[in-house]
Length: 239
Length: 239
DNA sequence: CGTCTTATTGAGGTCTCTCAAGATTCGTGG
DNA sequence: CCACGAATCTTGAGAGACCTCAATAAGACG
Image 1: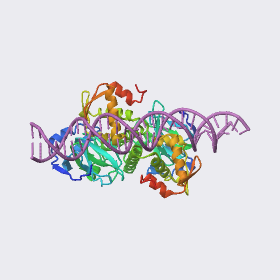
Image 2: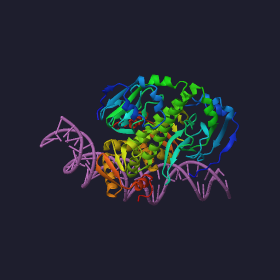
Image 3: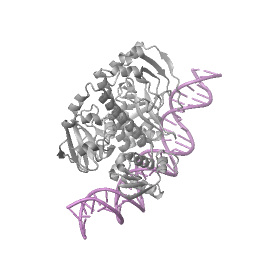
Image 4: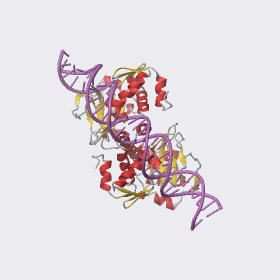
Protein backbone atom coordinates (compact mmCIF):
# COMPACT_ATOMS: atom_id res chain seq x y z
CA UNK A 1 0.00 0.00 0.00
CA UNK A 2 3.03 2.30 0.35
CA UNK A 3 3.72 4.39 -2.75
CA UNK A 4 6.52 3.22 -4.95
CA UNK A 5 7.56 6.01 -7.23
CA UNK A 6 10.15 4.23 -9.31
CA UNK A 7 9.38 4.27 -13.01
CA UNK A 8 10.50 1.15 -14.70
CA UNK A 9 11.20 -0.48 -17.98
CA UNK A 10 11.35 2.52 -20.26
CA UNK A 11 10.61 1.11 -23.66
CA UNK A 12 11.14 2.74 -27.05
CA UNK A 13 7.93 4.36 -28.25
CA UNK A 14 7.87 2.57 -31.58
CA UNK A 15 6.44 -0.51 -29.98
CA UNK A 16 3.98 -1.87 -32.50
CA UNK A 17 2.11 -4.08 -30.09
CA UNK A 18 1.25 -1.16 -27.85
CA UNK A 19 -0.06 0.89 -30.72
CA UNK A 20 -2.43 -1.84 -31.69
CA UNK A 21 -3.67 -2.27 -28.15
CA UNK A 22 -4.28 1.46 -28.16
CA UNK A 23 -7.05 0.94 -30.66
CA UNK A 24 -9.20 -0.22 -27.79
CA UNK A 25 -10.18 3.31 -26.92
CA UNK A 26 -13.06 5.08 -25.23
CA UNK A 27 -13.16 8.50 -26.84
CA UNK A 28 -12.00 9.93 -30.12
CA UNK A 29 -8.70 11.06 -28.70
CA UNK A 30 -6.52 8.17 -29.76
CA UNK A 31 -5.97 9.44 -33.29
CA UNK A 32 -4.58 12.71 -31.97
CA UNK A 33 -1.99 10.97 -29.87
CA UNK A 34 -0.73 9.07 -32.87
CA UNK A 35 0.70 12.32 -34.20
CA UNK A 36 2.84 12.61 -31.08
CA UNK A 37 4.25 9.13 -31.26
CA UNK A 38 7.87 10.29 -31.59
CA UNK A 39 7.55 12.52 -28.53
CA UNK A 40 6.02 9.79 -26.43
CA UNK A 41 7.48 7.50 -23.82
CA UNK A 42 6.18 4.04 -23.24
CA UNK A 43 6.38 2.99 -19.59
CA UNK A 44 5.57 -0.14 -17.68
CA UNK A 45 4.65 -0.52 -14.06
CA UNK A 46 4.10 -3.49 -11.82
CA UNK A 47 1.08 -4.13 -9.69
CA UNK A 48 0.85 -1.63 -6.85
CA UNK A 49 3.33 0.86 -8.22
CA UNK A 50 2.56 4.56 -8.20
CA UNK A 51 2.66 6.38 -11.53
CA UNK A 52 1.97 9.78 -9.98
CA UNK A 53 0.95 11.16 -6.61
CA UNK A 54 -1.76 13.75 -6.04
CA UNK A 55 -0.13 17.15 -6.18
CA UNK A 56 2.60 16.09 -8.61
CA UNK A 57 3.21 18.42 -11.49
CA UNK A 58 1.17 17.10 -14.39
CA UNK A 59 3.94 17.19 -16.96
CA UNK A 60 2.53 14.27 -18.90
CA UNK A 61 -0.71 13.00 -20.25
CA UNK A 62 -0.94 9.26 -19.86
CA UNK A 63 -2.75 6.90 -22.15
CA UNK A 64 -3.21 3.42 -20.83
CA UNK A 65 -2.22 0.78 -23.36
CA UNK A 66 -2.80 -2.31 -21.26
CA UNK A 67 -3.68 -3.17 -17.68
CA UNK A 68 -5.71 -1.33 -15.07
CA UNK A 69 -5.04 1.89 -13.17
CA UNK A 70 -6.82 3.45 -10.24
CA UNK A 71 -7.22 7.17 -9.56
CA UNK A 72 -7.39 7.63 -5.83
CA UNK A 73 -7.49 10.22 -3.12
CA UNK A 74 -5.62 9.53 0.10
CA UNK A 75 -6.55 11.26 3.33
CA UNK A 76 -4.01 11.97 6.01
CA UNK A 77 -5.47 9.37 8.37
CA UNK A 78 -5.34 6.57 5.81
CA UNK A 79 -8.88 6.74 4.51
CA UNK A 80 -8.88 6.34 0.78
CA UNK A 81 -11.32 6.78 -2.05
CA UNK A 82 -10.84 5.41 -5.52
CA UNK A 83 -12.51 7.80 -7.93
CA UNK A 84 -12.30 5.54 -10.93
CA UNK A 85 -10.56 2.65 -12.57
CA UNK A 86 -8.92 3.10 -15.97
CA UNK A 87 -8.52 0.49 -18.68
CA UNK A 88 -6.78 0.23 -22.03
CA UNK A 89 -7.50 3.30 -24.10
CA UNK A 90 -8.39 5.49 -21.14
CA UNK A 91 -6.65 8.79 -20.63
CA UNK A 92 -5.56 10.68 -17.56
CA UNK A 93 -4.20 14.21 -17.29
CA UNK A 94 -6.39 16.07 -19.75
CA UNK A 95 -7.87 19.35 -18.66
CA UNK A 96 -6.06 22.44 -17.56
CA UNK A 97 -4.87 21.31 -14.13
CA UNK A 98 -1.18 21.90 -13.66
CA UNK A 99 -0.98 19.23 -10.98
CA UNK A 100 -2.68 15.87 -10.66
CA UNK A 101 -5.67 16.01 -8.34
CA UNK A 102 -5.57 12.28 -7.78
CA UNK A 103 -2.88 9.67 -7.38
CA UNK A 104 -2.39 7.26 -10.24
CA UNK A 105 -1.53 3.71 -9.25
CA UNK A 106 -1.22 0.42 -11.05
CA UNK A 107 -3.88 -2.12 -10.14
CA UNK A 108 -2.37 -4.73 -12.42
CA UNK A 109 0.80 -4.71 -14.50
CA UNK A 110 0.30 -1.82 -16.88
CA UNK A 111 1.78 -0.40 -20.03
CA UNK A 112 1.12 3.22 -20.74
CA UNK A 113 2.30 5.96 -23.01
CA UNK A 114 3.31 9.33 -21.60
CA UNK A 115 2.86 12.37 -23.81
CA UNK A 116 4.45 15.66 -22.93
CA UNK A 117 1.74 18.04 -21.83
CA UNK A 118 3.48 21.02 -23.36
CA UNK A 119 3.72 19.39 -26.75
CA UNK A 120 0.19 18.13 -26.55
CA UNK A 121 -1.13 21.59 -25.76
CA UNK A 122 0.65 22.97 -28.80
CA UNK A 123 -1.07 20.31 -30.86
CA UNK A 124 -4.38 21.80 -29.81
CA UNK A 125 -3.72 25.18 -31.41
CA UNK A 126 -5.89 25.48 -34.46
CA UNK A 127 -7.12 21.94 -34.14
CA UNK A 128 -10.85 22.19 -33.63
CA UNK A 129 -11.39 18.50 -33.78
CA UNK A 130 -8.95 17.82 -30.96
CA UNK A 131 -10.46 20.53 -28.81
CA UNK A 132 -13.93 19.11 -29.37
CA UNK A 133 -12.69 15.68 -28.38
CA UNK A 134 -11.13 17.05 -25.21
CA UNK A 135 -14.37 18.85 -24.40
CA UNK A 136 -16.28 15.64 -24.94
CA UNK A 137 -13.86 13.77 -22.72
CA UNK A 138 -14.19 16.26 -19.88
CA UNK A 139 -17.97 16.32 -20.20
CA UNK A 140 -18.07 12.54 -20.04
CA UNK A 141 -15.86 12.61 -16.97
CA UNK A 142 -18.24 15.00 -15.26
CA UNK A 143 -21.20 12.84 -16.18
CA UNK A 144 -19.53 9.75 -14.77
CA UNK A 145 -18.57 11.57 -11.58
CA UNK A 146 -22.14 12.76 -11.04
CA UNK A 147 -23.48 9.29 -11.60
CA UNK A 148 -21.10 7.96 -9.01
CA UNK A 149 -22.04 10.72 -6.60
CA UNK A 150 -25.61 9.55 -6.82
CA UNK A 151 -24.58 5.97 -6.22
CA UNK A 152 -22.53 6.78 -3.15
CA UNK A 153 -25.21 9.04 -1.84
CA UNK A 154 -28.30 6.96 -2.43
CA UNK A 155 -27.59 3.28 -3.10
CA UNK A 156 -27.30 0.42 -0.63
CA UNK A 157 -24.26 -1.85 -0.48
CA UNK A 158 -26.11 -4.45 -2.50
CA UNK A 159 -27.08 -1.97 -5.18
CA UNK A 160 -23.60 -0.52 -5.36
CA UNK A 161 -21.97 -3.89 -5.86
CA UNK A 162 -24.48 -4.87 -8.54
CA UNK A 163 -23.91 -1.56 -10.30
CA UNK A 164 -20.18 -2.03 -10.07
CA UNK A 165 -20.27 -5.49 -11.57
CA UNK A 166 -22.41 -4.28 -14.45
CA UNK A 167 -20.08 -1.37 -15.07
CA UNK A 168 -17.07 -3.66 -15.14
CA UNK A 169 -18.87 -5.86 -17.63
CA UNK A 170 -18.87 -2.89 -20.00
CA UNK A 171 -15.10 -3.34 -20.29
CA UNK A 172 -14.67 -5.81 -23.13
CA UNK A 173 -11.23 -6.86 -22.01
CA UNK A 174 -12.54 -8.08 -18.67
CA UNK A 175 -15.39 -10.12 -20.06
CA UNK A 176 -15.41 -13.55 -21.68
CA UNK A 177 -18.99 -14.57 -22.22
CA UNK A 178 -20.54 -14.37 -18.77
CA UNK A 179 -17.18 -14.52 -17.03
CA UNK A 180 -15.97 -11.27 -15.52
CA UNK A 181 -12.30 -11.05 -14.60
CA UNK A 182 -11.76 -8.40 -11.97
CA UNK A 183 -8.25 -6.98 -12.01
CA UNK A 184 -8.58 -5.27 -8.63
CA UNK A 185 -8.58 -6.73 -5.12
CA UNK A 186 -11.60 -6.53 -2.81
CA UNK A 187 -10.07 -3.64 -0.91
CA UNK A 188 -10.02 -1.51 -4.06
CA UNK A 189 -13.63 -2.31 -4.80
CA UNK A 190 -14.50 -1.38 -1.23
CA UNK A 191 -12.67 1.94 -1.43
CA UNK A 192 -14.32 2.67 -4.75
CA UNK A 193 -17.83 2.00 -3.47
CA UNK A 194 -17.42 3.56 -0.05
CA UNK A 195 -17.87 0.25 1.76
CA UNK A 196 -15.74 -2.03 3.89
CA UNK A 197 -14.01 -4.99 2.36
CA UNK A 198 -16.16 -7.28 4.46
CA UNK A 199 -19.32 -5.75 3.09
CA UNK A 200 -18.12 -6.44 -0.44
CA UNK A 201 -17.52 -10.08 0.47
CA UNK A 202 -20.87 -10.41 2.16
CA UNK A 203 -22.82 -8.93 -0.72
CA UNK A 204 -21.01 -11.21 -3.14
CA UNK A 205 -21.78 -14.16 -0.87
CA UNK A 206 -25.45 -13.21 -0.82
CA UNK A 207 -25.61 -12.86 -4.60
CA UNK A 208 -23.94 -16.23 -4.88
CA UNK A 209 -26.42 -17.80 -2.48
CA UNK A 210 -29.22 -16.36 -4.60
CA UNK A 211 -27.77 -17.91 -7.73
CA UNK A 212 -27.17 -14.55 -9.37
CA UNK A 213 -23.41 -15.06 -9.65
CA UNK A 214 -20.72 -17.64 -9.01
CA UNK A 215 -17.37 -16.75 -7.53
CA UNK A 216 -14.90 -19.50 -8.49
CA UNK A 217 -12.07 -17.39 -7.15
CA UNK A 218 -11.54 -13.89 -5.85
CA UNK A 219 -10.77 -12.41 -9.25
CA UNK A 220 -13.47 -14.15 -11.24
CA UNK A 221 -17.22 -13.59 -11.20
CA UNK A 222 -19.49 -15.69 -13.38
CA UNK A 223 -22.79 -13.98 -14.00
CA UNK A 224 -25.57 -16.53 -13.89
CA UNK A 225 -28.51 -14.14 -13.91
CA UNK A 226 -27.74 -10.94 -15.69
CA UNK A 227 -31.33 -9.69 -15.52
CA UNK A 228 -31.40 -10.07 -11.76
CA UNK A 229 -28.21 -8.06 -11.52
CA UNK A 230 -29.78 -5.29 -13.55
CA UNK A 231 -32.89 -5.35 -11.40
CA UNK A 232 -30.83 -5.00 -8.25
CA UNK A 233 -28.71 -2.21 -9.71
CA UNK A 234 -31.78 -0.28 -10.81
CA UNK A 235 -32.79 -0.25 -7.16
CA UNK A 236 -36.09 -1.87 -7.91
CA UNK A 237 -37.83 -3.82 -5.18
CA UNK A 238 -35.25 -6.55 -4.48
CA UNK A 239 -36.49 -9.68 -6.23
CA UNK B 1 -41.50 19.28 -4.38
CA UNK B 2 -43.44 18.67 -7.57
CA UNK B 3 -41.81 20.17 -10.66
CA UNK B 4 -43.26 23.38 -11.94
CA UNK B 5 -41.98 24.08 -15.39
CA UNK B 6 -43.54 27.47 -15.93
CA UNK B 7 -41.02 30.16 -16.72
CA UNK B 8 -42.01 33.42 -15.26
CA UNK B 9 -41.42 37.11 -15.42
CA UNK B 10 -39.52 37.38 -18.65
CA UNK B 11 -37.57 40.57 -18.28
CA UNK B 12 -35.79 42.53 -21.00
CA UNK B 13 -32.10 41.69 -21.00
CA UNK B 14 -30.95 45.27 -20.62
CA UNK B 15 -31.56 45.12 -16.92
CA UNK B 16 -28.69 47.05 -15.40
CA UNK B 17 -29.12 45.70 -11.91
CA UNK B 18 -28.72 42.15 -13.07
CA UNK B 19 -25.57 42.95 -14.99
CA UNK B 20 -23.98 44.42 -11.94
CA UNK B 21 -24.89 41.44 -9.79
CA UNK B 22 -23.26 39.32 -12.46
CA UNK B 23 -19.92 40.73 -11.48
CA UNK B 24 -19.97 38.37 -8.56
CA UNK B 25 -18.55 35.54 -10.63
CA UNK B 26 -16.52 32.41 -10.08
CA UNK B 27 -14.60 31.90 -13.29
CA UNK B 28 -13.45 34.11 -16.12
CA UNK B 29 -16.51 33.39 -18.17
CA UNK B 30 -18.60 36.41 -17.31
CA UNK B 31 -16.89 38.73 -19.76
CA UNK B 32 -17.71 36.42 -22.63
CA UNK B 33 -21.38 36.42 -21.84
CA UNK B 34 -21.47 40.19 -21.93
CA UNK B 35 -20.96 39.99 -25.68
CA UNK B 36 -24.19 38.02 -25.96
CA UNK B 37 -26.27 40.40 -23.94
CA UNK B 38 -28.69 41.17 -26.78
CA UNK B 39 -29.32 37.46 -27.40
CA UNK B 40 -29.97 36.72 -23.77
CA UNK B 41 -33.15 36.28 -21.81
CA UNK B 42 -33.42 37.18 -18.19
CA UNK B 43 -35.73 34.89 -16.26
CA UNK B 44 -36.99 34.72 -12.72
CA UNK B 45 -38.18 31.72 -10.79
CA UNK B 46 -39.76 31.31 -7.42
CA UNK B 47 -38.58 29.00 -4.69
CA UNK B 48 -39.07 25.36 -5.67
CA UNK B 49 -39.64 25.95 -9.36
CA UNK B 50 -37.92 23.78 -11.92
CA UNK B 51 -35.77 25.52 -14.52
CA UNK B 52 -34.98 22.32 -16.39
CA UNK B 53 -35.43 18.60 -15.88
CA UNK B 54 -32.73 15.98 -16.42
CA UNK B 55 -32.98 14.84 -20.02
CA UNK B 56 -34.27 18.16 -21.32
CA UNK B 57 -32.61 19.46 -24.44
CA UNK B 58 -29.90 21.82 -23.30
CA UNK B 59 -30.84 24.70 -25.59
CA UNK B 60 -29.59 27.31 -23.17
CA UNK B 61 -26.66 28.06 -20.98
CA UNK B 62 -27.78 29.61 -17.73
CA UNK B 63 -25.87 32.12 -15.69
CA UNK B 64 -27.21 32.71 -12.24
CA UNK B 65 -27.52 36.40 -11.42
CA UNK B 66 -29.03 36.15 -7.97
CA UNK B 67 -30.38 33.45 -5.68
CA UNK B 68 -29.52 29.79 -5.32
CA UNK B 69 -30.05 26.81 -7.60
CA UNK B 70 -29.62 23.12 -7.01
CA UNK B 71 -28.52 20.53 -9.57
CA UNK B 72 -30.11 17.25 -8.65
CA UNK B 73 -30.60 13.71 -9.79
CA UNK B 74 -33.95 12.05 -9.11
CA UNK B 75 -34.29 8.28 -8.99
CA UNK B 76 -37.48 6.52 -9.96
CA UNK B 77 -38.26 5.54 -6.37
CA UNK B 78 -37.94 9.06 -5.01
CA UNK B 79 -34.37 8.96 -3.82
CA UNK B 80 -32.61 12.16 -4.69
CA UNK B 81 -29.08 13.45 -4.76
CA UNK B 82 -28.13 17.09 -5.04
CA UNK B 83 -24.85 17.26 -6.92
CA UNK B 84 -24.20 20.90 -6.18
CA UNK B 85 -25.65 24.25 -5.26
CA UNK B 86 -25.13 27.23 -7.55
CA UNK B 87 -24.86 30.87 -6.55
CA UNK B 88 -24.67 34.22 -8.29
CA UNK B 89 -22.12 34.07 -11.08
CA UNK B 90 -22.25 30.31 -11.42
CA UNK B 91 -22.91 28.72 -14.77
CA UNK B 92 -24.78 25.61 -15.82
CA UNK B 93 -24.97 24.02 -19.24
CA UNK B 94 -21.38 24.35 -20.42
CA UNK B 95 -19.75 21.33 -21.97
CA UNK B 96 -20.84 19.40 -25.01
CA UNK B 97 -23.85 17.60 -23.57
CA UNK B 98 -26.91 18.05 -25.74
CA UNK B 99 -29.23 17.34 -22.83
CA UNK B 100 -29.02 18.31 -19.18
CA UNK B 101 -27.73 15.47 -17.05
CA UNK B 102 -29.22 16.97 -13.92
CA UNK B 103 -32.38 18.80 -13.03
CA UNK B 104 -32.06 22.50 -12.28
CA UNK B 105 -34.32 23.80 -9.54
CA UNK B 106 -34.66 27.04 -7.64
CA UNK B 107 -33.71 26.81 -3.98
CA UNK B 108 -34.56 30.44 -3.38
CA UNK B 109 -36.09 33.06 -5.65
CA UNK B 110 -33.61 33.33 -8.50
CA UNK B 111 -32.81 35.56 -11.39
CA UNK B 112 -30.82 34.07 -14.21
CA UNK B 113 -29.81 34.82 -17.74
CA UNK B 114 -30.33 32.27 -20.49
CA UNK B 115 -27.95 32.34 -23.43
CA UNK B 116 -28.70 30.41 -26.56
CA UNK B 117 -26.34 27.47 -26.75
CA UNK B 118 -26.07 27.69 -30.52
CA UNK B 119 -25.04 31.32 -30.42
CA UNK B 120 -22.66 30.72 -27.57
CA UNK B 121 -20.97 27.90 -29.44
CA UNK B 122 -20.45 30.18 -32.42
CA UNK B 123 -18.81 32.69 -30.11
CA UNK B 124 -16.20 30.07 -29.31
CA UNK B 125 -14.93 29.80 -32.87
CA UNK B 126 -11.55 31.40 -33.03
CA UNK B 127 -11.76 32.61 -29.46
CA UNK B 128 -8.93 30.92 -27.62
CA UNK B 129 -9.54 32.80 -24.44
CA UNK B 130 -13.14 31.64 -24.20
CA UNK B 131 -12.18 28.06 -24.94
CA UNK B 132 -9.52 28.17 -22.24
CA UNK B 133 -12.07 29.51 -19.78
CA UNK B 134 -14.51 26.75 -20.62
CA UNK B 135 -11.75 24.20 -20.19
CA UNK B 136 -10.91 25.70 -16.81
CA UNK B 137 -14.55 25.63 -15.81
CA UNK B 138 -14.96 21.97 -16.72
CA UNK B 139 -11.73 21.05 -14.98
CA UNK B 140 -12.86 22.83 -11.85
CA UNK B 141 -16.17 21.01 -12.01
CA UNK B 142 -14.37 17.68 -12.17
CA UNK B 143 -12.17 18.65 -9.26
CA UNK B 144 -15.18 19.61 -7.16
CA UNK B 145 -16.99 16.39 -8.05
CA UNK B 146 -14.00 14.28 -7.05
CA UNK B 147 -13.68 16.11 -3.78
CA UNK B 148 -17.31 15.43 -3.06
CA UNK B 149 -16.92 11.79 -4.01
CA UNK B 150 -14.28 11.49 -1.35
CA UNK B 151 -16.50 13.17 1.19
CA UNK B 152 -19.47 10.92 0.51
CA UNK B 153 -17.26 7.88 0.48
CA UNK B 154 -15.09 8.49 3.51
CA UNK B 155 -16.45 11.14 5.86
CA UNK B 156 -18.78 10.75 8.82
CA UNK B 157 -21.99 12.73 9.15
CA UNK B 158 -20.26 15.12 11.50
CA UNK B 159 -17.37 15.67 9.12
CA UNK B 160 -19.66 16.14 6.16
CA UNK B 161 -21.74 18.79 7.88
CA UNK B 162 -18.65 20.66 9.04
CA UNK B 163 -17.22 20.52 5.53
CA UNK B 164 -20.51 21.72 4.11
CA UNK B 165 -20.71 24.68 6.45
CA UNK B 166 -17.16 25.70 5.60
CA UNK B 167 -17.87 25.42 1.90
CA UNK B 168 -20.97 27.57 2.21
CA UNK B 169 -18.89 30.15 4.04
CA UNK B 170 -16.82 30.50 0.90
CA UNK B 171 -19.86 32.13 -0.72
CA UNK B 172 -19.51 35.80 0.13
CA UNK B 173 -23.17 36.52 -0.37
CA UNK B 174 -24.17 34.07 2.35
CA UNK B 175 -21.74 35.37 4.95
CA UNK B 176 -21.93 38.42 7.17
CA UNK B 177 -19.07 38.26 9.60
CA UNK B 178 -19.49 34.95 11.34
CA UNK B 179 -23.13 34.66 10.35
CA UNK B 180 -23.93 32.15 7.64
CA UNK B 181 -27.30 32.41 5.94
CA UNK B 182 -28.27 29.10 4.40
CA UNK B 183 -30.68 29.48 1.48
CA UNK B 184 -31.59 25.79 1.38
CA UNK B 185 -33.79 23.74 3.71
CA UNK B 186 -32.46 20.87 5.79
CA UNK B 187 -33.78 18.31 3.34
CA UNK B 188 -31.61 19.76 0.57
CA UNK B 189 -28.53 19.64 2.77
CA UNK B 190 -29.36 16.05 3.63
CA UNK B 191 -29.76 15.05 -0.01
CA UNK B 192 -26.53 16.83 -0.85
CA UNK B 193 -24.52 15.08 1.85
CA UNK B 194 -26.11 11.66 1.52
CA UNK B 195 -27.64 11.78 5.00
CA UNK B 196 -31.12 11.91 6.45
CA UNK B 197 -32.64 15.19 7.47
CA UNK B 198 -32.62 14.03 11.08
CA UNK B 199 -28.91 13.37 10.96
CA UNK B 200 -28.33 16.92 9.78
CA UNK B 201 -30.36 18.25 12.68
CA UNK B 202 -28.61 16.06 15.18
CA UNK B 203 -25.13 17.01 14.03
CA UNK B 204 -26.05 20.68 14.16
CA UNK B 205 -27.46 20.15 17.64
CA UNK B 206 -24.23 18.50 18.74
CA UNK B 207 -22.09 21.29 17.29
CA UNK B 208 -24.31 23.77 19.05
CA UNK B 209 -23.98 21.90 22.34
CA UNK B 210 -20.23 21.99 21.91
CA UNK B 211 -20.29 25.73 21.38
CA UNK B 212 -18.93 25.50 17.86
CA UNK B 213 -21.99 27.14 16.31
CA UNK B 214 -25.25 28.78 17.25
CA UNK B 215 -28.46 28.17 15.35
CA UNK B 216 -30.80 31.11 16.01
CA UNK B 217 -33.12 29.83 13.33
CA UNK B 218 -33.16 27.15 10.70
CA UNK B 219 -31.64 29.32 8.02
CA UNK B 220 -28.97 30.98 10.11
CA UNK B 221 -25.79 29.51 11.55
CA UNK B 222 -23.48 31.65 13.64
CA UNK B 223 -19.98 30.25 13.72
CA UNK B 224 -18.53 30.63 17.19
CA UNK B 225 -15.44 28.50 16.74
CA UNK B 226 -14.20 28.52 13.21
CA UNK B 227 -11.02 26.64 14.06
CA UNK B 228 -12.97 23.80 15.62
CA UNK B 229 -15.07 23.55 12.50
CA UNK B 230 -11.94 23.26 10.40
CA UNK B 231 -10.54 20.61 12.71
CA UNK B 232 -13.69 18.55 12.42
CA UNK B 233 -13.83 18.93 8.66
CA UNK B 234 -10.22 17.88 8.27
CA UNK B 235 -11.19 14.62 9.91
CA UNK B 236 -8.63 15.04 12.63
CA UNK B 237 -9.09 13.11 15.85
CA UNK B 238 -12.47 14.39 16.99
CA UNK B 239 -11.83 16.87 19.75
C1' DC C 1 6.32 -26.52 1.32
C1' DG C 2 6.29 -22.78 4.51
C1' DT C 3 5.15 -17.80 4.61
C1' DC C 4 2.73 -13.78 3.39
C1' DT C 5 -0.98 -11.59 1.43
C1' DT C 6 -5.73 -11.61 0.37
C1' DA C 7 -10.32 -13.24 1.07
C1' DT C 8 -14.11 -15.10 3.73
C1' DT C 9 -17.07 -15.73 7.58
C1' DG C 10 -18.73 -14.88 12.36
C1' DA C 11 -19.95 -12.03 16.43
C1' DG C 12 -20.81 -7.89 18.24
C1' DG C 13 -20.93 -2.84 18.16
C1' DT C 14 -22.17 1.67 16.27
C1' DC C 15 -23.48 5.07 13.24
C1' DT C 16 -27.12 6.47 10.74
C1' DC C 17 -31.89 5.63 9.41
C1' DT C 18 -36.83 5.16 10.14
C1' DC C 19 -40.80 6.18 12.45
C1' DA C 20 -43.22 9.25 15.27
C1' DA C 21 -44.42 12.99 18.10
C1' DG C 22 -43.94 17.91 19.17
C1' DA C 23 -42.17 22.59 18.13
C1' DT C 24 -41.35 26.23 15.20
C1' DT C 25 -41.84 28.95 11.24
C1' DC C 26 -44.25 30.76 7.34
C1' DG C 27 -47.83 31.93 4.37
C1' DT C 28 -52.48 33.16 4.01
C1' DG C 29 -56.73 34.95 4.88
C1' DG C 30 -60.00 36.67 7.90
C1' DC D 1 -52.88 42.28 13.25
C1' DC D 2 -53.93 38.00 14.66
C1' DA D 3 -55.28 33.21 13.73
C1' DC D 4 -55.01 29.16 11.46
C1' DG D 5 -53.06 25.50 8.51
C1' DA D 6 -49.16 23.73 6.15
C1' DA D 7 -44.62 23.08 5.78
C1' DT D 8 -40.33 22.65 8.00
C1' DC D 9 -37.56 21.63 11.80
C1' DT D 10 -36.24 19.30 16.06
C1' DT D 11 -35.90 15.64 19.28
C1' DG D 12 -36.70 10.88 21.00
C1' DA D 13 -36.88 5.79 20.68
C1' DG D 14 -35.99 1.87 18.36
C1' DA D 15 -34.34 -0.68 14.27
C1' DG D 16 -31.22 -1.82 10.71
C1' DA D 17 -27.33 -1.52 7.65
C1' DC D 18 -22.84 -1.46 7.67
C1' DC D 19 -18.50 -1.51 10.31
C1' DT D 20 -14.91 -3.31 13.37
C1' DC D 21 -12.50 -6.87 15.33
C1' DA D 22 -11.04 -11.45 15.09
C1' DA D 23 -10.32 -16.05 13.51
C1' DT D 24 -10.12 -19.12 9.63
C1' DA D 25 -9.46 -20.22 4.82
C1' DA D 26 -7.59 -19.77 0.38
C1' DG D 27 -4.12 -18.28 -2.86
C1' DA D 28 0.30 -16.35 -4.28
C1' DC D 29 5.17 -16.58 -4.13
C1' DG D 30 9.64 -17.73 -3.30
